[in-house]
Amino acid sequence: MADPIFAVRDLAKSFGGLQAVDGATFEVERGSITALIGPNGAGKTTLFNLVTGFIKPDRGHIEFDGRSVFGRPPHVVARQGMLRTFQITKALAAMTVIDNMMLAAPDQPGERLLGLATRPFTWRRQERAIHARAIDLLERFQLSRLATAYAGTLSGGQRKLLEFARLLMARPRIVLLDEPLAGVNPVLGRQILDHMHELRTKSGITFLFIEHDMEVVMNNADRVVVMAFGRVIATGLPSEVRRDRLVIDAYLGAHGEDVA
Amino acid sequence: MSLYLVSLDSFGHVDFWLGVGIVAGIYSIFTLGLQLNVGFTGIVNLGQAGFMAIGAYAMAILILTYGWSPWLALPAATLVAMLAGALVAIPSVRLRGDYLAIATIAFAEIVQSTAQNALGLTGGNNGLLGFDAWWQTIQVSMLGLLNLIGLGTQDQIPLFLLVWITFLVLMLILLALQHTPWGRVLRAIREDEDAAAALGKNAYAYKIQSLALAAAIGAIAGYLLALNITIIYPGTYSADFTFIGFAILVLGGLGRYAGVALGSILLWFVLEAARFIDLPLPGDKVAAIRLLVVGLVLIFVMVLRPQGLLGRRQEMVLRG
Image 1 (cartoon, rainbow over the protein chains, first blue to last red):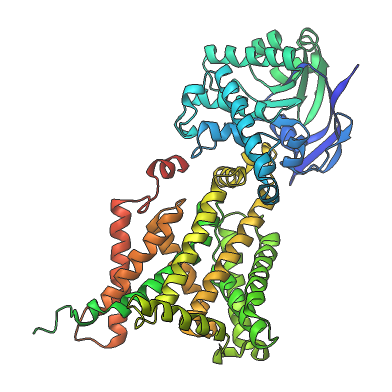
Image 2 (image 1 turned 60 degrees about the vertical axis):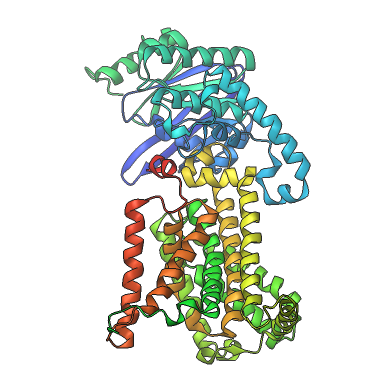
């Protein structure tokens, strides 16, 4: 691959007797939209949890933009510019939409007690800038009229948009989306995909997303990574993987002698 | 008159209610720390009485054994309590919910046992006396000033003022902190630690800070309690203190600092007013009835306002 922003090699994690991720290896091209697909239980979400530090891997290598993030805690991974969403949206329910947004800003010295005490003017100035940026993003995601509402009062779809917008506040370089379209109506789904394409084009953000809908994958992903039984069984262009024998077997069940 | 009446003899006594006000104020300060932990960070700290004890003992020992000036001993003791808070937090704050609660309550028990048994340091169950000469001096000059406005005979007024001014100052500091980006991260951790971590926030470090600050607040409550009863002994800092603090927290409302004062005043008013229930029963039975009345009031408030006196209902519902 010409210029990978993100590379996983021989990554493994077992839970007791279950080998959830079993030596997964793949790369993600900088500025690409890459889909991570595979049957249920293939280890896709576990892989997300491993690379973002939510679960400690047993072994392997995880490189993000030339630096190892193997075994680093989630907040460190996030600060390096790798941001993720969760399958079940994590809106901070009893906080307002605008607070949800402003929270994610990475550059606020007022988040530290020392910064509050020693830089009282800097953090206030920064807070105004962060507020402006948050409002701007909310407008782009058509959420600005809900800015002062509790995030918990939003509809499921609005929460997905909020989570997406919030993550952008953190200035990501790569975004990992865990089933961004699950439980979302087609109109909103289209909106989320449009945002993804626009951000990739305009801001150069790389996307890696888990998706089950093959039509969505074929129409939106530049590259596809296919997992089954904790391993990466195929990578390539959408048109390539759809014809891959191993992939077809994994999805439809193995036939004949070639068990994946 | 019938024996079954509430006697109002001492109901109107100012000094009695000043005394109640002092206790209510000390509990308010104590519970501010719990509010920071439980209401704003989402961590269950059942060891607050332990931090209070550590602060009070450290203050008294520095003054009595090492001859420190109280103006050095007070900040130093507060730092000692904060350090204790951080030390308890470091291994235990990664535990979730119930486990953290058990770890903190165990810590408070260790502190109490130590206070009872480290005779050379703490005087054991005899307690420590004579650490408050500095306060006696201040009190006398305050009473001299109060005499000018005709209040010189109420010798509890200085401590009453000290307690409630301390409460106000601490509450204003905490409110200000709550409206900073720091406070925002704390609330995010309360809502969903994983979401906060996924956005680059080090939940672990914030929880340690939250517990250390609560310990400092507990220590301050400990000094005032020591001044109020003029002796420091282990029984004063039992886990009961923490549980009453939690009752106040629920009564006043989670996530509202002012609710702490309201909850404490209500609880102590009911508890002390129940003293005047004049029943033909032995003293210990009457004491039990007082707590029963408090329990009923708690239930009553919870039925009418499940979010507490000042709590926000919507936040409670949204948090599930």
